[in-house]
Amino acid sequence: MSEGSPSETAVAHPGPASVAIPTEMRTAMFDHARRDYPNEMCGIIAGSAEPGAGGTPTRWYAARNELASPLRYSIASDDKLRIFLEIDDADEVVWAIVHSHVRSPAVPSMTDVGLAQWPETLYILVSLAAEEADPSTGELSLRAWRIVDGRSFEVAVTTR
Image (tube, rainbow, N blue to C red):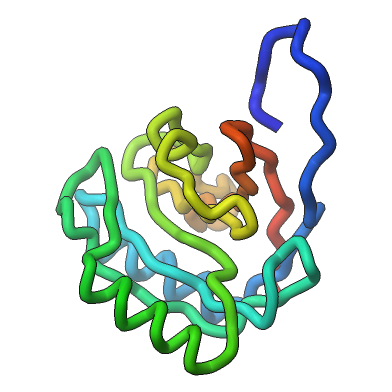
C-alpha cells in the first residue's frame, strides 16, 4: 500500500496478492517501452476475468501514447476503441492498463493515482530508469498495482 500518515486507518488490500504474466507478454511490454523511449509507452492487457476474481492475462495490446510525452500518457482514442471492441468481442475484460516511466520507479505517480478510473483492473508500470533495472540481469523493472479510492496497493508479479 502507498505510504500514508500514521493516523490513517489501515485499508485491506483489494487483491489479488500476486499475478503471473507470460514471459512473452513481459518481453513485449519491455520492447514497446524501449521503442517509445524517450516517451512513456502505453497498452492494455486483456484477461479471462478481473484480476481480483482470479482472472489471468490473455493478450497484450500495444497502443500509441497520443500525448507523445516523457511525463504523461493517454491511449490514442482509435487504439482504445479498437482494443476495447476486440476485448468485448472475445468476451474478455480489461485485465491491466500498462504504461512506462522513463526516469522514475515503476510506482504510480500522484498523476497516475488521480487519473486511475478502473479500480477493478491492475495498473502495470515498467521503469526504464537504469537504477531500477535488475542488477544481475539488467532487466527492466515491472510492478503491478491496484489503485482503489486514491490508494495504491502493490500486487506481486511473477513470470510464467
